[in-house]
Length: 399
Image 1 (spheres, rainbow, N blue to C red):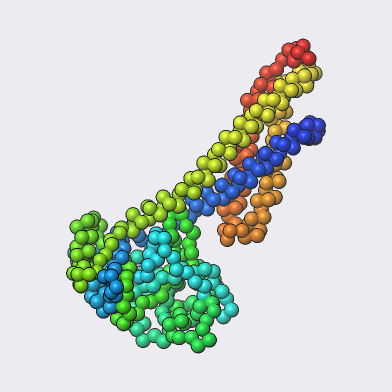
Image 2 (cartoon, rainbow, N blue to C red; image 1 turned 135 degrees about the horizontal axis):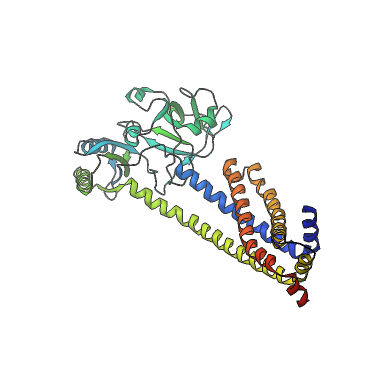
């Protein structure tokens, strides 16, 4: 039977070649859309590595042309922390979670090079504020004040890239291109390891990260400061107003913007969803066009082969047999297109394209193949029924 189907397909090779090409390109597009959607869904279901609920961020600015001494800033933080409803307060850098602000670099350790890594500044209360669980070691503490190297906490994925399966605590690494005469602040001492974190958006993959300890009570004069505040459940506008008044009460020239981190997350989610939704619409439009095209081609093939169908029925072929023949032909043609598409798609995981793991690619290949076969079978079903219903006398009389 299969040999007979191949013969029929070969006899109509010119028309079938166009079908195979259409199926091939449909598979490739569905594979690309599937890879994006599967990766996005996988990232969405992964944990963030921290707790953004009940966290606010403060952007504190000094007056125009002025700077805020660190001692005064620390005093403001103590006053904010003392407000009823405030649990913890942490000073950090401007690349707080879910904002369009990044700071990244590359690090090196004994010839090993890290991937591009997010770099955060953090004080001793950052882990408590963000509720980041530690896998190894500890977070920063006052005992680090006398350290000869800058204490850092790294994420598990950065640990793996620099230290592999060996120990990480107590190890010292540097920038990828270290200074020939390094300073103590350019040599980083690992004090702890946390879970991988996703601070860009709900749909982003974990990025290797490092948190550099902000030295307490330094003499730096800052123009702006970014503060994370964990508040009690139910805190709202009243507490936000108290925080703003507390900050402004230091010099009457400082201002602060209070933002809820969960609002930032939802805003970033909508921004990230726009291209994903657009790609999904394009994929759906493609599926509809492919389905209509296949349906029309099969319908036309049946009208052109009525004599062949009538002759087969006159020779004893059943209606079900004719229907299965047309469906089988379409499945064989689909297989040619899918195999060509798979040969192209497997190059992506083999070449480690776009730095994605193998699993999303394999799932996208399976999903694209299943979708193409499903669409083809659905489009071939009704024309196959029409072919099965043709009576031999009617078909031969028309000829």
